Length: 140
Image (cartoon, rainbow, N blue to C red; front, side, top):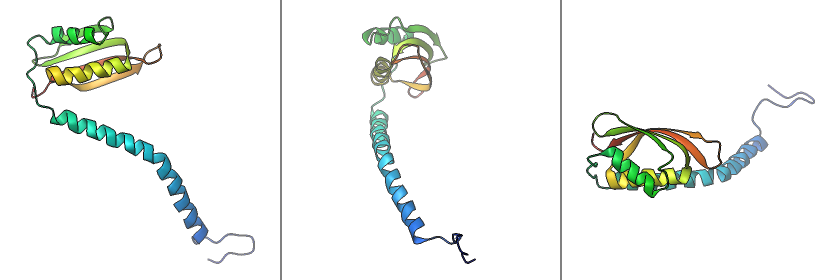
């Protein structure tokens, strides 16, 4: 179909292709920092997966409480329930996010407990979260 006076052609124009290239270039600049973060996370995941497995402690609740104490989370640790052998459900309220992440890393490295499922919700205080976690020992 040919363009008539004042109406654009329906066929693609070189300028439109240049626009899409330009748009993609801008898009790649915006995506680049996100890609870097994803790559950093992939390195962290690989390190965690490569860590040797450790035997879980005999009493998971005591081990969780001690680790929570070391990270200043003792008062935020509201509930710990056994969920079968080698697993516990944990409820935490109003915990600083960074302390919670450090606590989970320590549990992974020291006791072999990993978060099998996690629900985090923003708490009223900035930088704090409520969390419901299912922690399971590796290999169980």
